[in-house]
Amino acid sequence: MALEVEVETRKLNGIWIPIEIKVRGKVIRSTGLLNSGFFYLEEDFRIPIISLPQGFLILEGIPWTGPSRKHPDLLELDIGSVYVRVVTEDKTSEWIDAEVFGSFKDHIVLSKDLVGKLGVKIEDLCDNTWSFRGDKR
Image 1 (cartoon, one colour):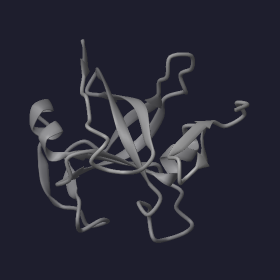
Image 2: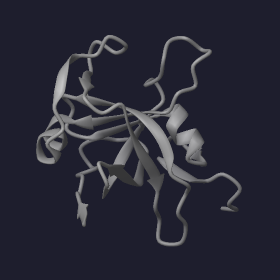
Image 3: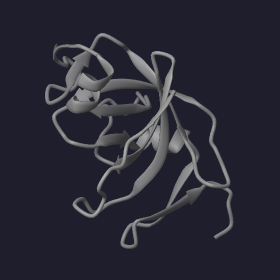
Image 4: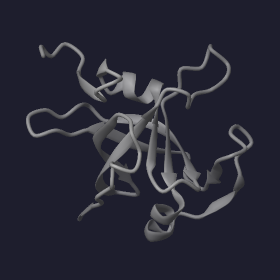
């Protein structure tokens, strides 16, 4: 069963990427906001990270255990990771295993490391455009 979630992107300027998230055997289609400042402070770690809004967690019955030790402004979840992929009309990326946290924001946030592993290339930050790496624009 696929649940489609629409996110109002006009409120937040930025690069929105159409994604599917596989969590607990369900695939959920949504959009995620690329946040280039969302990463581990240790440069040695290039771990893909995603944060899911608290409302999403409640709908999916995913409990949180409290503030994260790694990211104090995020929530630690009882699941450690989810699979994420980019889905457009003409192309779908491979599934990427991403470390997952909960968030008090009302939207999904994608780390720069996750977006990079998904094969996404930022075209223009002013126009908020992106493409798959290797695609000709």
